[in-house]
Length: 219
Image (tube, rainbow, N blue to C red; front, side):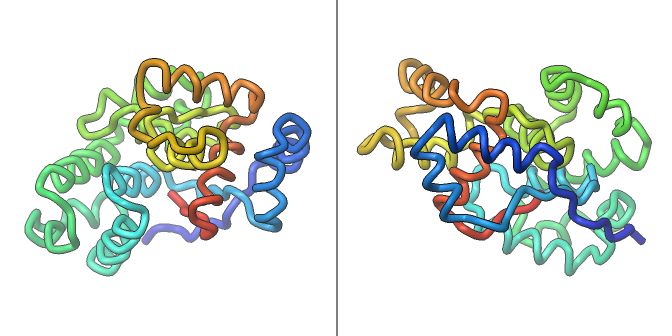
């Protein structure tokens, strides 16, 4: 059975909040409206990646619902417990056939010890992304969620995250749809806006997510 791990707040969190409040008045207002909450890591690499796969291209609310049913079905949501379930059983949790394949493939990687979790911690952000995206079903966004939520990397800017782009459109570029910020000049604008958040772009992203949904998501 999986060990219940205590949530861990990043050591840099308070310093990052102070730095961001000075650097960006807009973000400072968002941070002040969400006191006493923070990003937390529970340390389970498989769960972080599995939940990120579940959340690909669907809303946070829908992902929470599917994840809850998956946990109820698998009990101890570990690689062996996922591999023991039939594909149809996993489909009935609300997963697409492709996500079932991705999830079972991920479980196989962990069960076969093909992922060196301890080794990932010693890699650079881009090295982690390169390693994880070699696994079928894990793209750059999923790897970036792992960097933020599991490895607690402070300076990740997930430019493909629609929630982040929606929040930037709302607070910095009124009237701009998230879809217009995904490429070209829109992406350059987002990168420029985020330049004052360095070296804490993960923290800025987390607070911008909170401006859309005050309940923190955990991967």
